[in-house]
Image 1 (cartoon, rainbow, N blue to C red):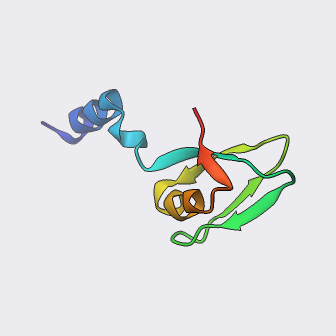
Image 2: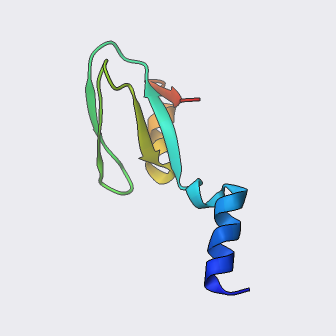
Length: 71
């Protein structure tokens, strides 16, 4: 299997997107959170409470109970 075929197979299986989780901010105001692993800044507001977050940063954020996985 060549690279292009492997990439297509990954996209079809949904594995290509497995590094990103959508998180919902459950707080009452807005929040800026720096990812503990990547250092990326994530900004959540009442108007945009759902953001795509690197899965390595998402796990510690989910433990705070201020975030949950979005559907």
